[in-house]
Image (cartoon, one colour):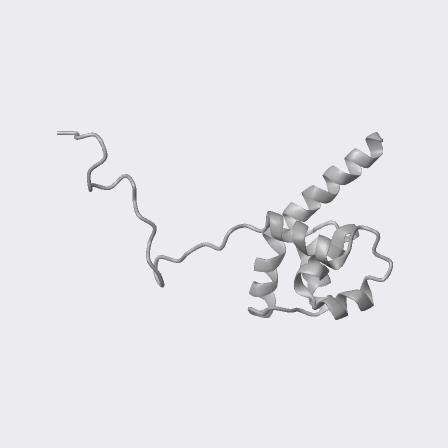
Length: 118
């Protein structure tokens, strides 16, 4: 039972790392795309020193379901949908660039509601 708990914790930690690091690395190395090749995903994971045992997380996130099914036949960590859901759970929210869109409101700048410092 203790071994199962440790395995689950390691899997979740790997999911956090894959979700946080793999997408930006793929985009940086190979350009922005919805899908990447299995070789690109594996190369990026190795460059980032992500645990290759959990490569199926990256494959589920960046491959089409049909392509994932072909290469992940022996995967015992979860289905395509389960792995994508776990990946998405830990994926950081998209940052909004102030150069191209509206900047979030600065709650500390003027405009009332705060303490008058005069």
